[in-house]
Length: 211
Image (cartoon, rainbow, N blue to C red):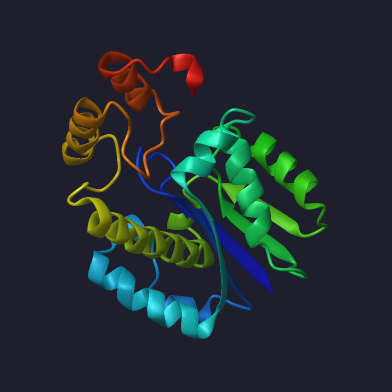
């Protein structure tokens, strides 16, 4: 059995980082489902595929909240946080691990991943693996749907927050307006991210060194 690993929410300024793995003996069922990079699927199609994937394959997730990420960022890089999460979702006994590489250096991340996991499995850690390997595509769908559902819960709590990504003006306007009004960041926001640090520095007495 081998597993594929991917994440959702790495670059977001709001909401969780979700890492997922999907394990299978072969790609046959996943190819039949038609899995592909989750970014290339509509939300409705991702939801439908999520149900099919979880019925035919083993899967695992690891979630880091914005608060947890901020805390860990005081000690380590985002790549190291993600590496820990990758290790958490690998099931025991797999003979092969295929992952979408979060680091610019594939060889370095592969070496650190192998060392951290202490496994003699075959490692394939590549950029855009979610667009190449069906088992990683399936993991990207699990991660994306899980994060989307959690963001929906956050919108239910706080109102319209947008997608949570810094490229989304709805998200950034929501955060800025909240900081102006409350002199603190809203819940579920990564205060260690530079755009939020800048807003806090400008709008409140919060010091950058606090994050």
